[in-house]
Image (cartoon, rainbow, N blue to C red):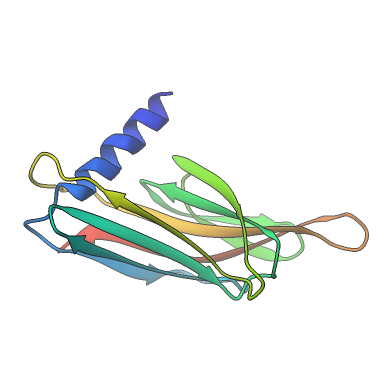
Length: 145
């Protein structure tokens, strides 16, 4: 529960940054899926949109949000890397093109934000022998300018 409270505070503090801009910078390697993102001001709030593409169509993809950049090798069908700690995650399904976008409005609040966040996607599939296969995207670093 503490992680959810911390994540909610982090996301709300991102929204509070309407006086400043936020940057989304890609970092790290990918094992196939590509992550991209943007945070746009919309009136008195911001809207974020994080997209994974180049994943397998119709497969599970985990959206991971963290507060620390890491570089942890994962060996499920090949060496890929977990590039953020896991403060929050959700499982979604890619569309027929192998893409998924997670987008939400962040309502305004207290002024200022000095933190940073990290986003990554992990495609989760099984091979023909029922072995777990995990392919990770590059990471996205979100920080104030």
